[in-house]
Image 1 (cartoon, rainbow, N blue to C red):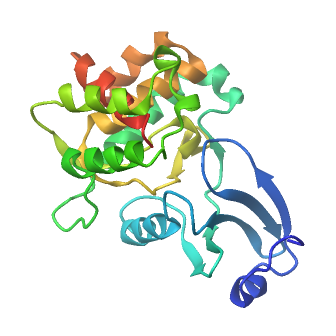
Image 2 (cartoon, rainbow, N blue to C red):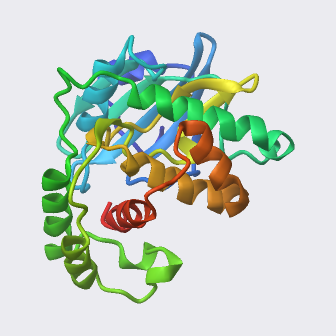
Image 3 (tube, rainbow, N blue to C red):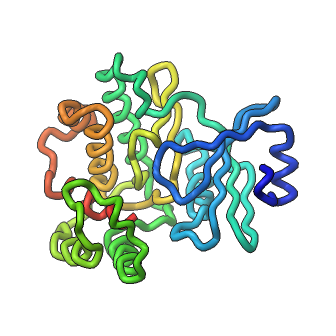
Length: 259
């Protein structure tokens, strides 16, 4: 890239590759798909001043190797200006692609199958804590320091202020957590399919131990946004929930406004 002075090791690994900017999804990173003679890769470049760190994603994907189909970390480095994370490509198309409109029942089943696989990862030795004590404290810090994007709130919260929503977050906190290993951002652009089946999961910066509704809530919102509310019941039933906790779904969607 002409505008970036890349670390020497990264320049060697990506020599001869064609760089194309990826714009789908919401992220503080500049993400590029690299195509080259030896294969395809993704690189994330993240300012050191960003709210979140690429190191968190790197560490989670390294921990998940052999547990779930996730990208392989090929390079990570941090300098005075940026973090750089080079990843192998997960083959396929993400689940938000409109080509899936012709096979929605199969897609919805695969989203549920994929989420069950994520939640089946054992948490005995998981070092990543995303329980409410941890995440609410982080949300409070973000609200206090003006790091919450109030312009990006869901339509139901248009015009709301982060400080007011944080008080609501405290007041509505669920009494108990059903803890599993969670993706943290189980939205359709982060689930990759090939030949009609899950081929991998990407964007792991918020993965860790949390209530299963952390993922269920964001999956529900993403399904509604991409393909319509009429598919939500089938997704939840395929996952194994016939009587969903709507209060928790609403709560974890509220919590996501801070991230």
